[in-house]
Length: 366
Ligand SMILES: [Fe+2]
Image (cartoon, rainbow, N blue to C red; front, side, top):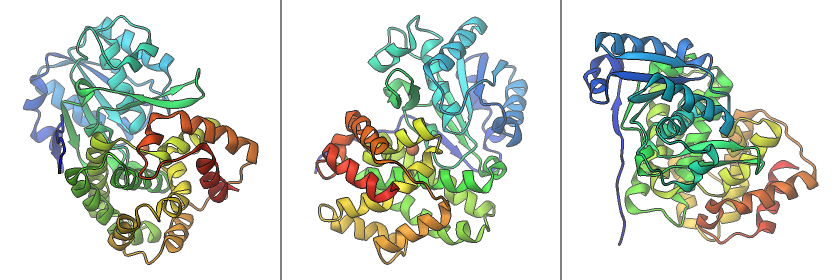
């Protein structure tokens, strides 16, 4: 047995965790630059709680609420310049995966005079500003990962950067903030959390510790299947989903994701299919593809969710996603080629070829 275990984020979980732990904020300076999208930070009540805590702590702040869905390099460049202009000591990301990931890039760009494409060198002359994260969705896990996934128009895909300095220093997880999500986003993001746990569990990089987190996250998702199907998503279920999402983030902090994410990025880039939904469309065939190589682990995944077969799992995903997506073969050929270029393809438990990826996508999407 040989493994490394480290999580760089101090996580505060529970109702009103920002207000209860506002002393934490002062540790990172006296000027906070808040990074969010247009609506969820406000609608969830998270922005209000953060501002209240900052004001009570005597911390100056500025809000940058221009993060797009699936932020681009141009988008984070603008945010980085604004944070620098403000003289920020810390960056507070509030929102779903997009604002949290953008916050990490902004934290680097605020103190490094580099072109955003150089973020991918993962080595910076100046340490990024401290990052604090407040999720308003339950899926990304970005509040406890070092990863920032940005859209690369030059490469026609999404790609992640991050090093140990881009772990948020602190994360505040209050499930009440996820109540403002609509049903589809709740489902899509929950499936993203599941895919983090599952891909990490079936990664060549999985460790005994990451497996512990993964098993717990998959079990929690399983407990939420029926409430999601019945649209009976109360605060207790939202708390389970948020916890599962955090655990999924802890898994991929160790393992990274693999081919489901690699393939899914094209569905988001070219067809605007939400990230978690894209993963959900591919997961059944991902299990089928890996079954011979990882029979024991896949059986365990199904058992944890109390789902009798991969086929039945596919039916559950179809029912939750209610999507009818049909793609042309030439589109999938392009997506397979792009997915193969993602470094994460090499971490799948079974060695994959481009033809294998095309096969998974054809079986999933045609
Ligand atoms: Fe994801």
